[in-house]
Amino acid sequence: MPRFLVKDAAKHVGEKVKIAGWVNVRRAHGKILFIDLRDISGIMQVVFVPSNKEVYELAETLRPEWVVEITGQIVKRPENMMNDKIETGQVEMSVESLKVLSQSETLPLSIETDGYEIGEEIRMKYRYLDLRRERVKRNLIVRHKVIKFIRDFLDQENFVEIETPMLTKSTPEGARDYIVPSRQDPGKFYALPQSPQQYKQLLMVGGLERYFQIAKCLRDEDPRGDRQPEFTQLDMEMSFVSQEDVMDLTERLLILLVQNLFPNKKIQETPFPRISYKDAMEKYKSDRPDMRSDKNDKDLLAFCWVVDFPFFEKNDEGGWTFTHNPFSASKTEFEADLLGKKNIESILTSQYDIVLNGFEIGGGSIRNHRPEALEKVFEIMGYKKEIIQEKFGHMMEAFKYGAPPHGGIAWGLDRVFTLLLNEPNIREVIAFPKTGDGKDFMMKAPSEVDKKQLEELHISVKKPKAKK
Ligand code: ASP
Image: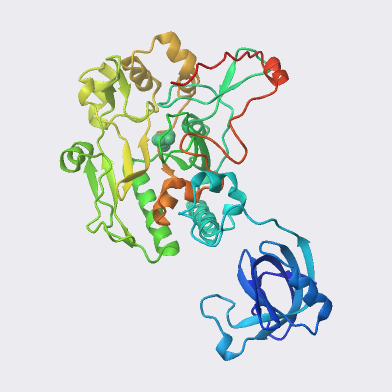
């Protein structure tokens, strides 16, 4: 007999069906035993009566979180026993047979509540149990639905989903790289991608025209409460587009997504308002202004675009560095300044950031597709010819062979989910998040590795200095 999800089983009144899942609660009502059986789809009330002696006695031994398979008849509950609070509340199962598939010890944490009140360390250590919590489970299901919606939308718009490598080259992209030692090339290292930026641009040179990826990005940044060392971007790149085209596509997708999957939410203003970096700083003292007219309304979404960022800023050593992305083009009116390396402080980039309720949820730009312009960016940053060649030679070379003009954007998906689901931090929308300082309490990572592994990699570890 096939197994039904409880949500579907509930539709088969009068029929004999099989269900399986976890014992949510067990309670006795006089001589009658009730179990709430939980599976991914919901909860079903299951009834054991003493006349079915063997099954009844087995049912008496059941404890919360045991995994069971039950066969029985779906019957309508008496009027006064109906429960509107659960989807299957009109019916219950009258049991014929019961099989215990797995027992459970008492859980080390409660899974009945929202869980906000439970210490994070214990939630993370037992994340596989924490995931049984209704709220966390629902977050992951909504996450899946949003990603599916995005995929379907982009497919309709002729985008191709393409995977790019995780083992790549360390290049200065703004954050610190996670690096991976090469066993076969002792002393050499791969880097994990901070974003697929260079690959997606190379895909445009490759003629793919419209690329996207639900991409993992890895950045070794200093711990900060709400940051993850690895996070997920919706990464996109398009050929033959203007800034307007990329912004228009982003806007259409965001609006449709909210309308279809979060109908309770209200978008404050469409088209999304735009503000220059200069005005944002003057008016809101922030380059990610919170434009909500009512900050108490949890269902109000105030999107806005921030544009006209300076291309370069001074770094700690007094030289120039890029504010967002070295691969961006300047705004057209500053092309001559960029090529002539003049008036550097006033060059504006084609960068556009998308902001939601005071959080930056994405950003992108039109890129420099001419090698000479890209080279100027690196020269302004003080890179010597050899370094440019060593670090970015592949990009310069690629752009020599008919590179189409292109541009793109990436959304920080974890942040988008956090805001749409009204969660207080991004760990609530990630299946297996790390703590703010990059630890995985469940797997106990990072961890030491075998001496043999280090030897194979020609690595010797210096004793770390004692922490102050
Ligand atoms: N690669 C950029 C980032 O990760 C996004 C982009 O410009 O497309 O922020």
